Length: 226
Image (cartoon, rainbow, N blue to C red; front, side, top):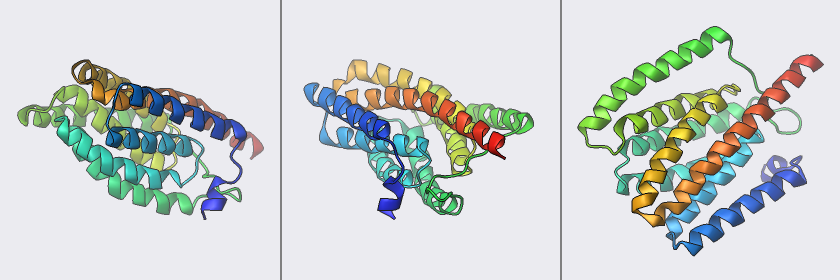
């Protein structure tokens, strides 16, 4: 299974992944980030790359990332992120099952796109739940309650869309990543050991934008070939 998952990926993919991992690890070590933060960042980056490449192996690294990040977020009082990753754990398992049943002969997942009506519904759900969840997070003294709320809700909906193989997951992920970069930058200003997580969020943002256009191009090509 592992050999099949790693097959058909380009040299460019592996080179970009390696360079990104070396950059984050080296800079984190220079600033004396702790081992757990670095390991978590590595798992997150590998997940993001393989998810973008439409390989279900991404969810294995997603599980490891969520387990580690739960602890990191709890220590930082980002309780919204704790709850988010508790939800991510079973969703990663569902992702493995669902993607396994929708792969082509190259073990690459077939993708699809939401229509305009369903996109509006998703955005409305995100905004409504952001307000409700933000009120809850504020009451339990979560840092950056409403920003954290939006990032969490957007990522949950985006992850569901990713499991279901919809291109638009990357649009929501990008909005959530912008919010997370802002949050972790403010945290980094007070605690330099969190540099790995800040870099991770910046890389997630770049990867999310890149793979949105990659998935969109792939989807358009599949329509043309049909």
